[in-house]
Length: 600
Image 1 (spheres, rainbow, N blue to C red):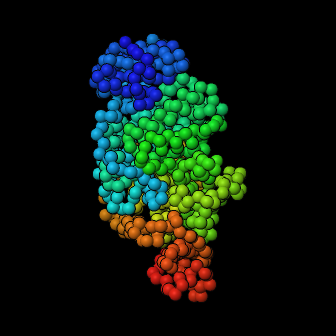
Image 2 (cartoon, one colour):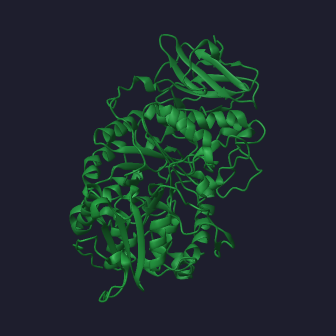
Image 3 (tube, rainbow, N blue to C red):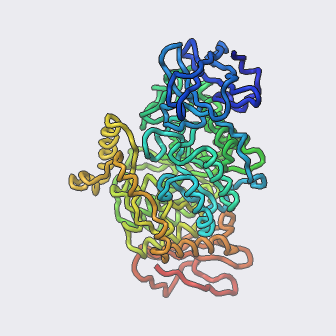
């Protein structure tokens, strides 16, 4: 027997929710179908499709179907049968898929988890040090439980905020997570939902925030069953770099928006996350008002209640409107990845002035401008793309720019997955590390960077051959934009993303913390200085200026009260003779002297 949705107080508008002492209430949007049944699966882990009881959901006459299954409870396995046929599919809003994207869904009751972080107040963007990590390769075990054992070390290092690469379930035995298809289900590869919750609670115990990287611009090429319920989830009205974009503004887009906003609530409310990193927002298309990104930001903050949150965007064109306040026509996000910083740094480290590095010279003035203005391109012509790039950033706080020397994409784009310390001389690498960690933006490290990990980070994805082969070909073609990677001998050596060995080679060896102790202590000492120095710890609020001192040298100066200024001198070249030194920024404070030095 089923009853209408409004007979029960639901937390989310879709999915399976346990109603204490009554059963499980199901609700799904399926305007493409005339009849929806919940089939309770039998067998171990729901491995006997269609063998259990079937409960027909009632149509709400608006594309939604809902009803109560009295025989279901937390831990029940189920699928939806469509139109009375032998068409069995998982719940689009399944909270867990123990057997992968095409297997049975599992009823999960998030209320049953006993949280211990009631005193956690959340995080603000100012003062953060971000650590990007992929759970499957962060440890040899590749699980939430193993990752939690590293939290104390990260806290001691000086990290304050963990940015977790996407965990929405995807097919196969390994993957980056950017081809997720079950957006409400944390990947079974890393553990159970409560393992994820325990990880977040443990991070909060250590004083670390946790944000999740989410992909709201496309879905993966394998295991996506949304079109079995409605064709309106996707659209062909916009170009898609990785598949069909999401329909946020076309016909029947209302329930699609509701689906994604419910997903935001689910991650923030049920996992106590401290915000999100939004992947490739340039491919989230919405011509309606309010823009879906504004609604996502509002939903994150409302779902967190009294907890403070941060919202970081990745936007390839680097449009400052995402960071501006809503009252000024912006979207009200907190920060954005700064590709300009990375690209200039990589040219300085490697000399590779090719592909999307073409428009960067890595001269001292670029680094001074990056420190002062955040982005380099604020509307100028970008020759590589043949169009203007960026928009003015004046008035934005310095912490709004997330700077990095490496991230998951950029390491993999080196062809052989090499970390940048292996692509550059140690002097330059250490100098730019100092700039990253003491500079005015928000620094971000990629897992293992702090101890100069020797393990590579490749692109890896486990798909069937008919999908894996074109993905490998596409990946190879993409890297041809780099002249140094277009050589046939190099192309032949590019790793196969579908080879399990490619994935295994990327797993970190934490023993290298001791083996590469000098790099580890460099990062640790610089982060301690950033945190404890009375001036550097307030760098976001102080007046800043910079000057070029030579062909490969520059200086940044923080102007502090009581003449406690700080200088950061970076020299990427030969010894610098500063006698004489006709540069005002090198002058000592009134009546004082300059102390300390920074070598190459």
